[in-house]
Length: 249
Length: 252
Image (cartoon, rainbow over all chains, first blue to last red; front, side, top):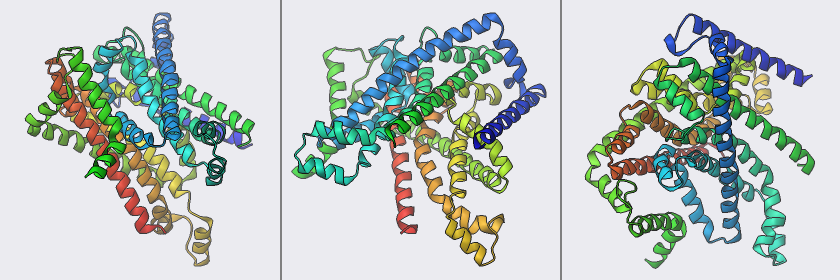
């Protein structure tokens, strides 16, 4: 019953937003910048624009996925290596915090030099993801019960074995939380990375349509980006629920 | 002396190695300074143009803080309204959840189209960015009031709705939540302000980056990036400190 109630709330909430938007667009409350929703929709379903939008979305999705996978791997590995060799930990924390603080738009040009324009979106997406996953994994490690840690220490378990058998499983729920947060940042990072002379993608579309005042195209691209990131989030949330149930957590 | 050095090394070896690798990479490959400046050129540029950078950094910091504050106020007010009217909270929750996963960079151009090119647009962008997390955190804080406290209020004849309950019970309960939201948001607000300045060409560090790059003054552009990174870390540290201080003062 609560599921139905939640669903109803969602439906009502979103339809209110859509109706409000339509009225605001028709009355031009925000000038030409906010077209009516129906106009954007009509534009997006024209075959030519649909093709353009889908092609760009596909490219961005690919970039974001590669970035997501690479970034998550790096984040997890860095967090783990700090566990295996303790002296590394503090320096890795500081380094990660600092790298995370470097504005992505500042890294764009550097990426173009090092990895090339085509791979820049992947690299920025990976960078955006890495920190979320790193922090979440570290948080998970800190939640390992002391008793467990003491047992491995008392039996003289090798660090990497303790990591594999005790710490990592304990950190898993938190790691998945990090992945969930990271997946939206991956889309964001990919779009941002595409601003720097990438050949195609939603980011390219968004900037060029802003400059050329193609307002319907701009809104369509932004909405597709949002839907993409929301869909990825829900997919991971679903996966998380299943996995946690499976693990009995 | 040795132990201080050792302490610095354990904490900062990552950054030190990164700097060394950067310097090494630039000098060994003999890379033109138009492509990648050396760390020392960047630091020199920062020192030589200290006044200029300080002014632009102040501008970006003020815009970001202003947006953060506006978003925070708006978030708290709307969360308070949602707290007092469950229907509104039901309506707003899906939107807040949906908008949380919005890639904000995709909407910066839209906000620019609506609000125009200028510093006020940067302010609007950071406000919009800050609003939703503040709303979500504040609302969950208001709703987290422990049952014991509600029971106590009822037993002394105070209603668990309305202004008095909100002011004396719900609001204080939500403060730690709001501080967490601020701590998480502050560095992001700064970086998003930067993105907006970069895209719009509004004065501030973001524009310094853009202009220096088109003038091929890469040392200047990287200096701005370095400054922005330091500022963002400082923002985070400041709010973490504030958070900790509040907790140690007010919570057992």
